[in-house]
Amino acid sequence: MPKRAKGRKLTSKEEAVIVDVVRSVNKGDKFSVARSVERIHDATKKSSAVIASRKMSNDDFRNTLMAALEQREIIGADSKVEQVLSEGLDALTEKENPDFRVRLDYAKEINKIAGVYAPERRETKSMTLNLNMSEEELKKKIAELGKEFEN
Image (cartoon, rainbow, N blue to C red):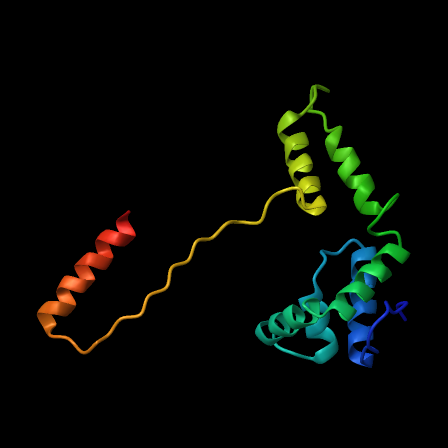
């Protein structure tokens, strides 16, 4: 049973999913909340992905999962993940020369984990269109909007 993070009480199925995720990762399997949800909830792959996404967006579930992974020394300081990332930063080629491509990939991954990169910037525009117009006026308005979006 995972040590629960502060917050609401988790359901027995949520606790079972966390235990299954930690057990799977500890065995060397890929981290997958969806796969554990599929097993625990006896769900399809598609619905388990939706359920897993909802669970991971829940702070109590996510914090409890992260606490359980830290408790088992899978993530955090002196963890398995830290060890693998450290080894990757020292990667060598077959000729025992530094493998800079692999080292760069590991450095990028560490930066992602640390949140170094800025979130992707997206610009959105909205508009309101009055459809009480003639076909000719509508074509003219569409052409104007097309020019505006090109700029």
